[in-house]
Every structure is written in C-alpha cells, then in structure tokens.
Image (cartoon, rainbow, N blue to C red; front, side, top):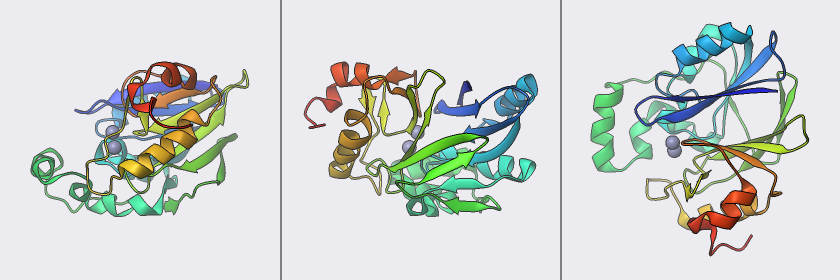
Amino acid sequence: MLIAALPSGPLAANCYVLAPAPGGDCVIVDPGQEASAQVAKVLAEHDLTPAAILLTHGHFDHVWSAPELAEAHEVPVYLHPADHGLLTEPAAGVDAGFAAQLQMLLGPGPYPVPPDLREVAGDQTLALAGVEFAVEHTPGHTPGSVVYTVTAEDGDPVMFAGDLVFAGSIGRTDFPGGDAAEMNRSLASAVLGRPDATRILPGHGPGTTVERERATNPYLRDIAG
Ligand SMILES: [Zn+2]
Ligand SMILES: [Zn+2]
C-alpha cells in the first residue's frame, strides 16, 4: 500500500494519497490549500487515478482544493453532513479575528462546492479504490469531524486522524462548533480505545502511533480510555 503525505498550504495541512498499488485507483484525503500540484505529481509518478476524495472535517485548510480536484477527476467527495456548511462559509469555522484574515487568504467568495458531495456517518465502511475505509464520527474539533481507518499489509490499522490528535498534541476546540467534552469522548474512543499498533496520520505534523500518544501525549493523560 502506497501512502504519500503532502503537507500543503500556509498551515501545512497534510494531504494524503493512498493507493493499494501503483498503476491503479487511489483515494485523496484532505486536499487543502495548494495541494493540487503536489497531488498531480504523485498521480503522475505512480500512474494513479483518483476514485474518491475523503475529508476528515470541513476546515478550509483541509478542503480547499477538493472542489477543483473533484471536478477535474469527476470523483465524489465524502464529508460528514455536520461540516457541509463550512464549504460555503469557511469563516463560520473560525473565531472573529481569524475570520478577517481568512477573507484575505481565500478571497471574498462565493466558495465552490464539489459537484458530487456525499455524506459519511460513523460506523460506516466505504469501499474505495479496492480499500475499505472504516469511518468513526469524532466530534469535538468540529461537529462533523471523522477519522478514516484502513488496514495496512502487515495487519496494523492506519488512521487518517484529521485534527483529532497530533504527535504530542490534540486539535483545538475553541473555534465555533468546537466542544471540549465531545473532544475528550472522541479521543477516548478513537485514540485510547484503539490498539497500540495503530498508526496515526494526523492533519498536521509527523505521523505517530496510538502507543506513543498513549504514553507521551499530555492532553490524553487525564482522559479515561
Ligand atoms: Zn481543523
Ligand atoms: Zn487543520
């Protein structure tokens, strides 16, 4: 299984391209700002054809290039319905101070929506590009945050975590729609409730594992798993 990590845009959000093998279908996860050129390079390098785009949540730094890529490759985009509104109103997902900056960063809008936008729900499994993606709804950072988990060749789970958890940190809950209590429940279930061998591919920064975060992440210390 090929997984390319492509940190993109001013906030270095991780876009991922996952494919079972070169020369076939692939899935793009979280193509945010300035992700398209890097994605195109990976597609060309491994002769890959996108089958779908998965979004972990609706924040602009994770979704910005999704409409453009979805249109170019004629593929569906999956996002939990609780975050669909953030596609057309990105400023609704940030605080007032940041919203002003966002106008400058993104332009005045209106902002495009992917032509084939689909809903994902927790406990759903999506079969895409020959790979099974288990969906878990993990609200807290945003109401519609989800994580997608696949199984690597060695049998270990690999989780696309979005802004739920990072190496040594967790996603912020102080933006509109954020909820610290829900976040703790999501972390207990989707991080502490997972096997140690689970590899975490977060929305920002380097990859990590459940084992490492359980042992060292200060934000998980007081949460019962
Ligand atoms: Zn976010
Ligand atoms: Zn983010």
